[in-house]
Image (cartoon, rainbow, N blue to C red; front, side, top):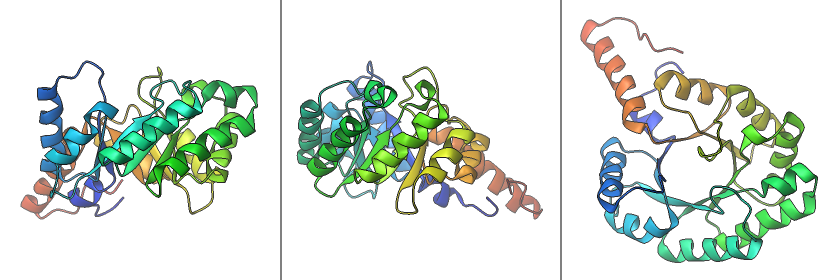
Length: 238
């Protein structure tokens, strides 16, 4: 990614604020990090959506949340209710967990209908479908991507970050190859440093889910500052 600026990289990041034990003070501190670095969005717990909308108002940082998180095993009706409440509270992006067991069972209609119901409830907001790729083989990942596309999702996403595995470049490439150009790929889970972030973008992701936004963007800022000070060629042309 030659000549990628800090602002351009920040525009790919959904800053994750999803730890179940996080206090309101800790949530506010993470919201401040997101605003400071100018990331694309924050992805907060459903109960924090309305608060986050108020806290980041006017900053340009969007607010998203999660649906059926982290296991994807709630009923479709429950996911729809979550989605409607999130929309009412001001979320503009919804990251829903696929029904993983149904996908692994080959119940394609169940999976697609579950996704489509959330897409409908989102009323035009962006919907990202989390596959939890560490639980799936390559065929299941590709099929899950195609089902998400069929159901009208905007993104397919690798992981929740709570499933014991995270994004890999191989999975991102497979996901990119499994959907058309109208569906984007989000890499999430284990994206904690600049090198990994750039590898995921190079593999085909256009959005990154991470709680390490400050670390990643700080690394790139240091590189850019060092290159500017020395007048040397850009050393971060990954």
